[in-house]
Image: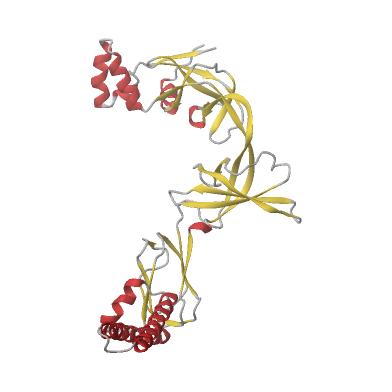
Amino acid sequence: MKTLIAIITTLTLFMSMPAIAEDHDHEENGSLESTLAQIKQAGLETEVIRLRHRSQMVSAPGSVVFNAYKLADITTQVDSAIYARHVRLGEDVKKGQELVTLTSSALAQAEAEYLRAEAEHRKSKLELKRVEGLVNEKIVSQARLQQTQSNYQAAHANLTASKATLFAYGMNKTGINNLIKATQYGQLTLYAPSSGTIVADDFRIGQHIAAGTRLMQIVDESTVWIEVKLSQAQMSGIKIGLSAVVSTKNSKTKHEGKVINIHHRFDQTTRTIGVRMEVENPEDALHPGMFVQAEIEAGIAEEALLLPIQAIQRHEGNKFIFIEEKPGHYERREVRVGKARMGLVPIIEGLNEGESVVVKGAFVLASELAKSNFDAD
């Protein structure tokens, strides 16, 4: 039996709102515009339902790990000591931001060698220019010119080598160019290579650090990886690029992603194959080590009438939806549903293709129905 509820925007839920009261006066004059305004304020949205192909799904537990492609290790390339830290564990940093400053005797020696090489290079360049002028005036011989050119080339090679050493130690071009006017030597500041969060910070002020030691880790957690293991039977239909949805035990939030890698090695012990998904994590809700439940698309199945989970309301064990008969008039109708997947529920019985269903704000209508205690055949 159908229960017909005429909700023409005069619901008591809305009458307490001043803006709605004004529209109510218009509706008594038969204005459709006031009805639509009140429906909009209530947050009701409808959708004409069509048959859609429903994806087959594979469900499996998984764990969260960092997206390794967005993980950066901050290391020192020269033996040094920690002079100052500029950020702390858990802090968000921007690309190019100062992280830590080091002092190094090896770096100071390399800087001194660079300055000597630069002075020698400048001197040999001036000498070459002078000798070239004398050759043009036939004052000195070609042999003298060749010797001067050889000296210049050697000086240039020494300068290039000393500059390469400084680059290898972590200095940038600006820092090297500023050495000529520097008053302090042997200090090196490391900068963030990318934006992200400091997730490792393993050093102390004054600590001596060997070249190659990791000081920090920075990671961009806007996306994370989900690692799951599937049996051979579950792998049927799983392909790179297919959609996936991940949820945690204590949250109803769904995190959307896709399959990015299928491992090429079969685990002989567990008889499973590893599958990796990249999942959006804009609210920073997923962290490495967390356990999740993953639903992975595995091909296309039959057509079905699909509704968002929030369109389905429950009362005393029954499930029902609201059909929009005409603007402002909604019919409550019991339905039989299948298993929800990817946030969508298939309607097995009670809904026809082409009908307009409330897909957002259905709880408003359900609440009004409960308050009115209206029960009709």
